[in-house]
Each structure stands twice: as C-alpha cells, then as structure tokens.
Image (cartoon, rainbow, N blue to C red):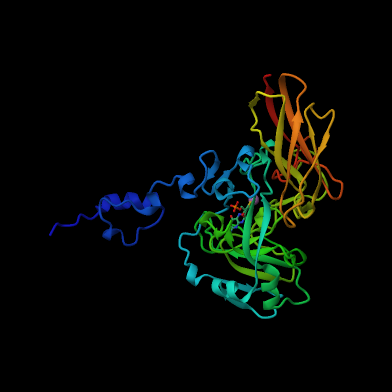
Length: 406
Ligand SMILES: Nc1nc2c(c(=O)[nH]1)N[C@H]1C(S)=C(S)[C@@H](COP(=O)(O)O)O[C@H]1N2
Ligand SMILES: [Mo]
C-alpha cells in the first residue's frame, strides 16, 4: 500500500498564519491538499456574477452593477449588487435552520423551522426594490468613507416568502412594541463571536406592511448564499441595510432597536442640513427611513455612438415608500424637459419603468438626463443633495453621454 504523505509541521505553521487560526486537525492534512479557505476565490464565479460587475472590496465582499447592466425589469442574480458588512457564514444547515421571535414586546417567544414557515403561513411573491443607503456615495465632497458606490447598488428581484407581519402576529405583539431588530448568522470581520457585523431594524408600523417578507426564494430559486440563504428579511423602499440576510432571530423591541449600526453615524443623516464637511454630533443624527425618489437610465450605455437620430431611452425609477408619478428627460443640459410615460409598479415597493423615443436634432454630442418625481411632488435634484458625514442618499439625476453620428 502506498504511504500517504502528510503535511510537514513547518508548512502547517505557515498555513495557520495564512488562515489566521490553528488548523485543528492539521496533522491529518495530506500534503497536496489546499484547504478550502485558501482555494481560489474568484468572486464572479463564487457568487455567479457577470464579469462586468465591479468589485469594490473583498473583505468583506462588496460588488456593484453598472447602469447598463440593470436593463432587465426583474434583476437577475448575476447583476445584483452585493453588500456585506462581515463574512458570509461558512456553515449553513438548511434542514436545521430556524427563526426565533423574541424581545421585550413579544407575547410568546417562538421558534420556527424553515419548514414551519413554509407550511404554517401563506406564501407571497413580490418584486421589491432594495437600494443601499450609500448608493451614489462616490460623488460626495468632501468624500465620505465607505464603499465608493457609483450608481449600481440597487436591484429589484422577485422575492418569495411569508409576510413578516403574519409571523410577528403569530408570536404575538404587545401593545408597547415600537421596533423590530434582526440578528443574523454572518461573522464579524474580527471573527469575535460576540460581535455582530450588523443588526438593524424597522419601526413596527413598517414591519406590519403586507410587502415586507421573510423570504426563502429569490427569482424563483432558493436564495443564493451571498444574498442571505436560506432566509432573509426583504424590506422594499427602505435602505437595504434593513433587509437582514442569513436571518436567525427577530426581536420585537419596546424601544428603537439598538443593534450594531443603528447608532452613531451608521445609516443616519443629520436631522437638519449641514455644510459640507461639518462635524455633526450624534444626537443630531436621524435614522434613514424611506429612500428618496431616484431613476436610472439603463439603455443606451453611456458612451454609445448612435447611427440614427432617434432612440428609445430605457430606465427604471423608484421612490421609497411612494410611487413615481412622473419621469422627465432632458437632452439640452436641463434647459427643457420632456415628460415621458412611466409604468405603474407591478406591486407596491417595486421599481417602475420608462421606455420612450427621444429625437436628436442633429449630429453631435448629447447628454441624456433623467429626473423622476414622486407622488408627493418631490423631484430628484440635478446636483448633489445635502452632504452628510457618511455619504448616504445621493439621488441626483442620472446622466449619460452619447454621440449621434448621422
Ligand atoms: N446579515 C446581514 N444582512 C445584511 C447585510 C450584512 O452585512 N449582513 N448588509 C446589509 C446591507 S448594508 C445591504 S445594502 C443589503 C445588501 O443586500 P444584497 O447583498 O443582497 O444586495 O443587505 C443588508 N443585509
Ligand atoms: Mo447598504
């Protein structure tokens, strides 16, 4: 019998330092074997993303789309941005996965297996817009720290699951309930098991909306690992940081949830506008709720060269909890605007679409600007909206450049 060659202790020591911990059964490692932790981790392959997605960070993984990649009405996985605050959980046992409802304001603390959720409650599918609160951060000046998202941290997939409201009511919500907060299985960057990478939440009134889901499917399939497999909250219209991935526990709180990234500068903006670069005291920061009205031109791609004097311009628009009522397009740097039709959302909290023929008077360089207005009559600003320390809520008009060559 051929003798098996085990790894040498010197190699083992350097392996341990690479992995950042003891390889506990390292003496059993065969010499040719590369531990999974060190195997090639191409994020495009790993997460089944399109090669044109842009990686902003690898620890934790953060990746965004580009405007022209978001042309689909329902965003497919390969074009969905990824935002992680910590490390993706390594071991997920779907058959043992459970969700616990607890907190000061729960009537009866309860734990549900995935099977319980799927069989005890009615299932719904909604298309829901999730936009990272920091989408557009790269444009703020003075610059804000954090992932330098341009315009691609938004997606609108189909999510299938049970209503958060149905599960909360099944456990029982006391009269003094104010907020819910989520707890997840991802791992803090320090690997300290007592620290959560993120634990955010929403007021009880938002939690009771019909479209807020505890989802186990995305676009008709089980949720991909990086998007929260096997269970996640999906809160359309609010900063996507409220949509807890790898969901394990929801606390019904009798006060505003005080989990990681609920306080300080995280996902909060000055309650009153401040000058760019101004220091803001914590007590003057307010939690971001509904996201502002915004639109994106998805066709053509910026830099396109047209061989005709008219073209169908396509895009999407969304308005947090509200609806988009009007889309206007300008090809003369905002001097005149033309209203174009916008579809109704397929359900509440889903993005809406425009697709309209625009004529260009003659050959040359043009910019196409799009501006959406919500049902309260509030429009996107043409320039950057209010500066804030962490660079949230940039909903300035999207602009693309094209050349007409006939
Ligand atoms: N458990 C957990 N949930 C999370 C996060 C996270 O790091 N951990 N990131 C949040 C943030 S900030 C965003 S923008 C969205 C991103 O969702 P996606 O990666 O599915 O696009 O997930 C949210 N839910
Ligand atoms: Mo985010």
